[in-house]
Length: 365
Image (cartoon, rainbow, N blue to C red; front, side):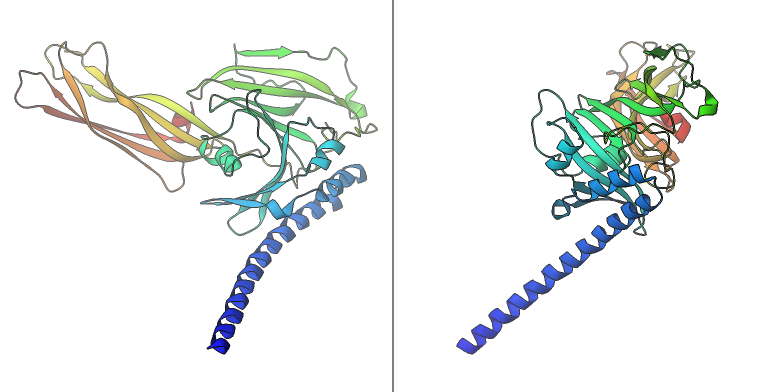
């Protein structure tokens, strides 16, 4: 009996060891993937930027790495230790992570150093899991505060701010003044009065910021002058602007930010009523979540149907169903609504239905 018990314990320990080895092996593959990508950038970067990447690499906490999956791949999140924060002269309350966007085939699409600066009334040492998944895919359940995204070499690229749970502002680093700002809303702040010689290769850098309301619509847009870089200059600090950007690795693709758009949809037009010969509309609020403005990931509905003021007095509108479907490619959506119209004195309610096929441009405009 003792021999059987001993054999059972040995088998249990061996099985447990196999599971740990498998998990450890899987982690090693992901660590190797991250390190290979960073090494590739070092090999293709000037020495000053390569040194910054090498320093970052030494301060990655791979033991706390986690993965946030989505239908087209995953996001690998690796914490960066406090020593690096001190070396990089980044504010003490900030939270740093290396964020890697991984394709379905296991290759890395892009990589960022993410610096989170919490709102004044928020105090915690690490971001909740799925934070970056939600930034890129769902536009919901994101802690308020500012999120700054850099290349692994520390070159500034994007800045996002969330307020009251929604994306309030988006900022991107731009070379020179931007002529594509939204007309009538655009302003330019703190611009430089110095004219640089283009032949010298110097670049004026601006932060172009877009402000949105809770429905996702742009309400303001402006740019702020940040500074000027020239080929012969080098910023020793980690967070920096740079005349040289390696767009083939860690900086070439736009950040795939998920945005939520709310549309008021005139779902049904009723024109048969003698009390409203020109007809009246029945409206429904539709919400689209769009990733990077090229892929719709979700749609939903807000509240109850709303009849326009031109609907006959005393008419009741009761929602029976509201639904929607997304095209496989995420570039189209279909919404459907069914209601009953009736007066209290009428024994038989009248059903009305409406539907609409949405294009991606209709979702975000």
